[in-house]
Length: 313
Image 1: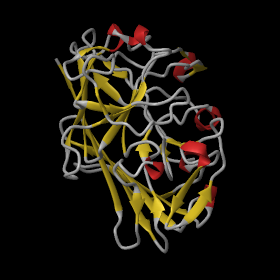
Image 2: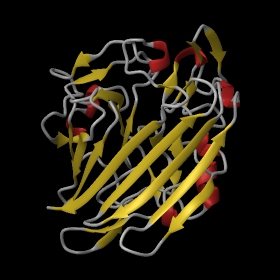
Image 3: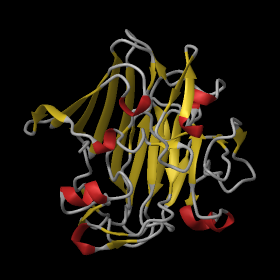
């Protein structure tokens, strides 16, 4: 399996500790889940329309695993393969673990050999840094790696996340069709249920959407490649706060709209039982030249940084 979600235990405002990451008690639970809980997803996370793209004049056809489209790298994407532990330093001031995977030319239809590394580092002051690096060894190839953690700041077994407040630092989003494929537009969030420029609860306008949130935001300040705030989530009951910082142009906000699975300790995770904030390149960028490019060329590695800062109010 790809790197998976272990417990992430943090104190609430009263000092009571709780696990805020949804997941399972066994590796088999992660393997059998319909969603990649906490996994590194790739080679190209999110959706690719009609399971194909053209690169350097060559049409690449991929296995479809979401209707006629490809999602999360195909039926055997990076969340379904075995990674190697490259480095493990559990002790000291900065504990860290590194995983590597060599994706072969033609795997799930993608061109070129790709060497991938995902690193998890525990920093001081309740901070977790995840870095994802990828090196194209011999051919240009699309790369969009994400961490697919499901969060519930009230505790993984506390119920839904509809009362949690969220602020997303994005003035625009990429609308989709009924199959969640981007139309190619980048439009303002103003006047829509997608406007979280000012913090408000997840559930405040969720009923205006067919099922809930599953949308990519174009983060403000994108294009520089520098670290910027993506989102802040606050659970008022527990007092826990999560801030996400990234160097990626987008973030997928997903409210686990059809979740229905038995998780840790036998607790049933139901729809809206957790939320995902996946920093990323835009979905289906390979088919939209106006979106930030996801193409990685030999000699110019991919580098994705996400920093999670946890605190209490």
